Image (cartoon, rainbow, N blue to C red; front, side, top):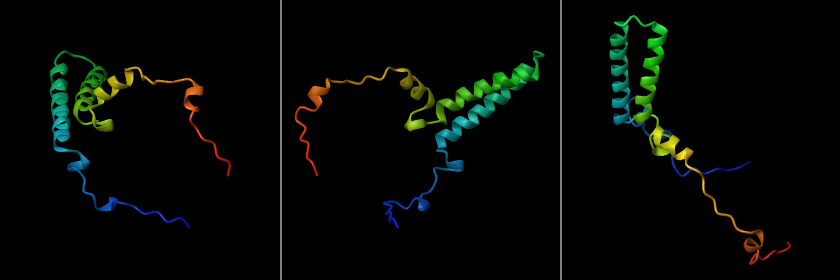
Length: 107
């Protein structure tokens, strides 16, 4: 049998708030809902189809929620996506240079 020791008790950790969101994330979610509702009311006066209004509000709310609620790696969503577009620079050297000083031991 394998024995595993945990350094933290993960079951006693408390969440950040309502639904595990931090207060600023709750504010962004509330702003997205309010702006989405106002957009629906504003666009309905122009006799647009409900399907088109739904898509416009969905995209609008996804952008607002992406700004503050979604945080992969501790940064907001758009900073994360921009960093993934930046080219990944890795420096390589010749194989001879890597293994020059390596000591190989037979066991």
